[in-house]
Amino acid sequence: MTIAFSPRIDEADRLKSQRVSARGAISAHFRDGRTRLANLAQEGAAKIRMPRADADPLEAILINTAGGLTGGDRLGWTAEAGTDASMVVTTQASEKVYRASSGHAEVAVRLSVGESGRIAWLPQETIMFDRAAFSRRLDVDLADGATALIAEATVFGRSAMGETVERGMFRDRWRVSRAGRLIHAEDFAVGPDVRSALSGRAALGESAAMATVLVVGVDAESWLDRVREIIGDDGGASAWSVGGTGKLLARLHDGNGYGLRKRLVPLLGLLNGRAGLPKCWSL
Image (cartoon, rainbow, N blue to C red; front, top):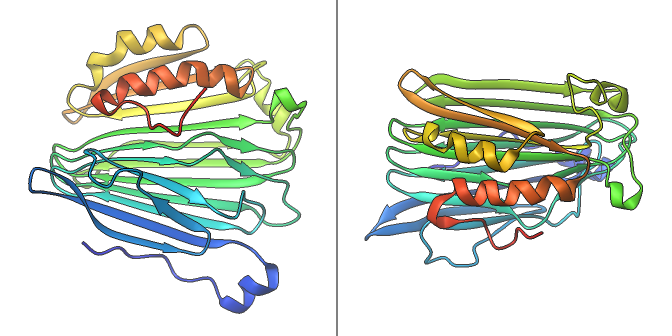
């Protein structure tokens, strides 16, 4: 299985600006009755660790050793689960995006799953600081019969620390395809007046934390009632079929990251089946 990175940022420019340019990639295949590591690549501040290489599904923990992101930083992750393989991908901790003096931080994620394979993309929250500028891109390619659980949570300022996000920029782009056909697309953008934009009734209102959870698979619709029970009134969920593919989409929000996590943890634990929630997640 071949893993290709995007073109390298010029070395002279990287050293001059002292910005992060990091990439990590992992692939797994199913062999001898269980999922096994096939390839692993890591560069710069992007590190990947596996607490149990013999576990099935294979669990990969992504680590940004730079300790956060700011304007001009680039971080890329690639995860591939082959035919019949099962993989859970998470992060060691919440990703922090700090104030940008110029430019924007960028995280690009590419996930692919072979026939009858499964992937769960479960990073911990992204925390936005005031005047941060951040762009996140997620591209998912699923083969026929593949399933996916995808979650992203974002917190605009840590209320327990007295932090608020007044101004900044946040862009979030998702594209999910099955057998080459686009089955889910969304773009979210806010800024530069973040607080004003998010406080509207059509946005987060008084909330400062939000999460989107997507399930793609033949039995996705069967989870709907239980998902709605966990989410409660601060969010919602819907399920439908797209070209014969089941899809469940849930969104939830809360006044702070802790309140959001109290519902997100059981929700992801439910949807991730026997694999449960990665151990590095905690309340």
